[in-house]
Image 1 (spheres, rainbow, N blue to C red):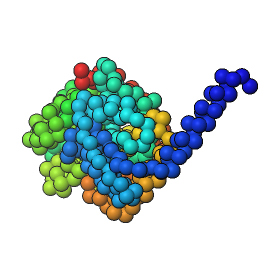
Image 2: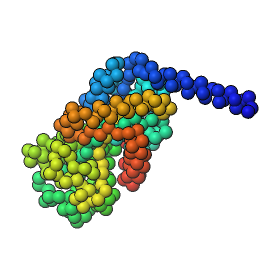
Image 3: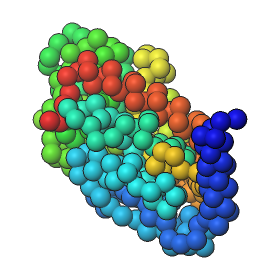
Image 4: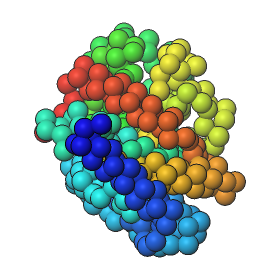
Length: 322
């Protein structure tokens, strides 16, 4: 064996021994979870719930660090460049895989720059219409929109938002020419549909539930592949005539690429146990979400699928935030 080859093999062995020892002592101190959005939103809530339970499980402080900006890209870039020691993690959502395509210049690669730990939960939107709209289900909305190209409006909480892209996917799969009307946030978008300024919206489930129950909007379908536990009588969009349609906000935990597999496996074990507990399932149900807790491999495959799917939708729609 050549000397250079021998040295390389010895160095790799030494690094493996050090990494193994490091993983055995992990965690020896506080863990920081970066949330790349402001406090109070869905991603922040998911991060804080996980952080609280993880701290209890490992007996170490878990600190939430909100680093908002550029639709989540600022905080995500920080995590991509953080030390690969398991002490800096990230909880992120659907914007994680859509922002790199929406912006002309991406600050990170969602597949190459991160190691998937676990999909925590998903929160579907609900396709709702103003009560004045003469449609009672998804099939009727599709027929109504096809008969009136360019006339049916749907509200969104800004270009590139989850409700916006859910509508673009709906347009792509139905061949309709519905028109997106962007508003400055979810609140103004909801006000617009309640007033009848726009006829439809792919509304976050948590916000939609009380409006549906009070009759202020009419629900047509859930955007996940499974029915929502909080509204089991409402069919999915997929089973209502648009087979395979799926568009949901989701929450997952990740680490910088190159983190020790032993540390990743340890964190995954905790995340799965936390999310599959009866307490967390009930909390998620009450917030219009569904607790998951997946393997690392399932979450990694999910990220790749979502990244590819939404890149195609964004390209076809011409959506941009630049």
